[in-house]
Structure formats: C-alpha cells, structure tokens
Picture (cartoon, protein in one colour):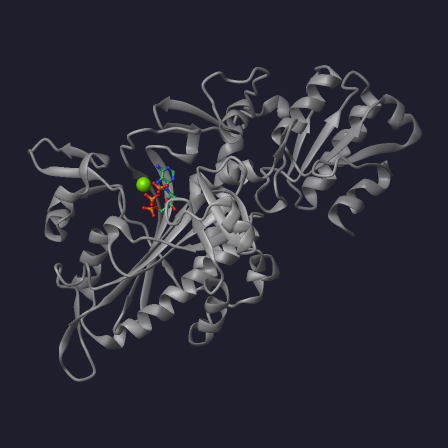
Length: 438
Ligand code: ATP
Ligand code: MG
C-alpha cells in the first residue's frame, strides 16, 4: 500500500481526553475515531489489525471444533423475558421499540438467541455435543465508557455456546475452550493468565477470566510464578478427552484479581506470587441448565428420557484485545506490534522521492516484496525524513526499510527492527530475500 494513497490521519499531539497509552496511540496512529461516547469507527489501519485479531480467534475456535455462524445484532425482547433477563439485565441493555411497538434490543450477549435456535432444531442426544459461535458487534450501555475500545459501548465479541448431554461432557467442552483461549492469546503475542472467576449475572459454577498482563490494566493481579513455565501451544484443543491434565496444570496455580481476593503485597511475596496489573480479554462459563431449563432446550437421552442440555458460554473481547495488545506492546515512540497482528509487516521509507533512480529502486523493492506476499506500507510521500521516521515508529510495523540518496549510491538500504531498535545495512538486491527469509 502506498501511503500517498492510503488514509492514515496520524496526530502529532497527544489527545487530551485519552487517559491510557492504547487509547492515545490508537487515536494518534489514525486507527480509530470516536463517533459517540464509547462508539468508534475503525479507520483502515485499525481495521486491518481488528481483522487479524479476529482471524486468529476464528482459527483457534475452528480448530477446537466450534462452528461459526452469525446471529443478528438486534434481538426480540420476548426471548429475554423467557430467561428472566429482560428485567434483570438493567440499564446496560439498549432497549428499542420498532414501528409496531414491539420490544427489541441491541444484543449485549446471545445466550437466549442461541438457546432458541438450538431448541428448535436439536432433539436428540445423538446430535450432541455442539459448540456454535459467532463474531458480532455487541452493545452494552456501560455507565462509564472509557479507555477507547477497551471499555466501549459498542464492541466486537466472539461468543461461543456449547451444548452437551451431561455435566461431565460439558466440562470437556469447557476444557477445549480453555485451551483454545490460551493458544489464541499466545498467538496474539500477549501473555494471558486464567483466573477463577465469579459467574455473576450469567450464573453457574465454573468460570475463568483470562487476563492479559499490562502495567496499565484495570485490575490488580496476583499469580504464581509457575505460569511462566507453561507453553499453551503444546496443547491440542481438539483432543477433548485428554485435556483435563492440561487444564489442571494451569488451574492448580494461584491466580486472582483484586476483585476476587485481597492478598496484600506482603502476603504476595510470601506465597511466591508475581504482582501486576491486567486486562480481562476473555471470560468462559459453564452454567449447566441455567438457560436450557427455563427455555426448555431439551433432548432425548439414550434412556428415552428428556433432559435439559448442559451449556457453557465463552466470550473473547476482540476489539478490546486490540487495545490490550497495545497496552502490552508499546514504547515511548509508539506501538510495537507483534508480527501476528501487525497491520503491515514492513514499512518502506523512500527518503529521496525527488530522485528518480532512488525512487525506482524503492518501487522495485515494494513490488518485489508485495509479489512475495509481504504486506508493505510504502511511504512514498514527499515529506521530511523526521516526520517519516516518527510516523513509522508510531504505527509500529515490525520492520522498517529505509532508502535514501547516500544508501542508494552505495547500493544499500537500512533495515530496522521496530521492537529491538537494531539497525542493519543490507544490499539493495538482497533485501527482499532477507525479509522473506529466503
Ligand atoms: P467487564 O468485567 O470488563 O465488564 P464482562 O465480565 O462484562 O467484562 P463478558 O460478559 O464476560 O464481560 O464479555 C466477554 C468479553 O467481552 C470480556 O472478557 C471482555 O473482553 C469483552 N468486553 C466486555 N465488555 C466490554 C466493553 N464494554 N468493551 C469492550 N470489550 C468488552
Ligand atoms: Mg461488563
């Protein structure tokens, strides 16, 4: 992508109303703009990152055996009256009336709708287990939307729902999601700690929150040093039968947020705990028949008797993750994207746009890299070097390739690693192979 043709409205100044790094950086890097409190447009650069996060979340859900579908944002209030949550959900629910005076709502979550779909179609234990998910915008009229996309009112969530015949099978489905979550966050380049959580208004008995570590996180967290020794990528979530030991390995270690426990700092050092801050990026629940019973989502079991199915629900804050990744991955100059979610892999800077030969060399690097399937943002604008460098650091692409007059004469470009700051001189005719790893 040529920057001269792109839409990247970066800001030099720090926006006054943004209190945390990710919010400031997302505004400054031209990723998002606010439409109303807690409601954002995703500009092209932000949109690319959002889609990459979404794609990794999707791949891991698919690999764990969950089936993607898409439910609407607008729901009928009737189903929520059946479960009792139309009244219970309170002011966070955006209630709408259509022209016929029917009560509608903008979905804050989808337990009721998915349970309705399930109960209409599935009647036998032979069709179980099932895990259905979608990635869809949610609306919650948060009392204090803040921190940009981290606590928005409209936000993108992946929510999955599992259906099993027995509680024992339900726990297997839960474990598959548990492992898929750990893998998802590892692939996104962040460290997430699973913490046993209260089930809150969703109800039920088994629940974990996944907390990404970042100094600016909303919650204070305490966790066992042992978490550092585990590699989530070693576990295979499609291996449902054998996941319990893997999950036990993680859940046997102590981890808590300040809302759940209040071990004071001294106690933390006693207990061999690491103390830090974190951001909730995912939340999983096993809640048995809490919805299936009142809503009569029942199947016939092997013995011919009808039973309410055992359900779980599993949420990932996809749009929140974009902010959380930035909180965990930035420095004083801007964002430092993990490669897996970077909007482009390479930023190519032409410092001599008036020099035809140098520009031709840059154009060729751009064409060759693009041809090799590398995503390149090519700064071909006739602006000053300082602005180009600071802009590229701000938007945080993993690699920068810089070509100027002097380098061109000597046949070399500079290759900079954004994360380490290391610079290296590479021959112009070797740069494509160097970046593509050939
Ligand atoms: P929180 O305690 O942060 O309000 P929650 O417990 O209400 O979260 P869930 O209902 O479990 O959240 O939703 C699943 C995931 O959706 C959360 O783990 C979080 O990552 C994300 N999420 C929830 N509320 C918001 C929001 N207002 N803005 C952005 N993401 C959100
Ligand atoms: Mg909430």
